[in-house]
Length: 101
Image (cartoon, rainbow, N blue to C red; front, side):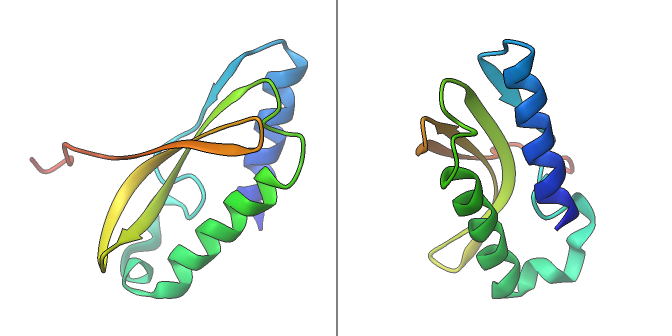
């Protein structure tokens, strides 16, 4: 997956350069232009697979990583920020204000 590979590379560069915080764009795991795919469960499942792949490495050791991805909660999709540190999820933060608001 190209998006996951780009995220991993971005984290590696941030760590190499001594950063303690790395943030990425909105919906960076799935890409912003998924449109109808946001109605498919597989899109959400794949996003969590990507988070798992990152957490199962040392990538988040010593660096706070902020990743944008869709999250389904109680059958409602949310555009969220996932905060990772030391191989754990610290927080999931849904977007409050949408572009059309």
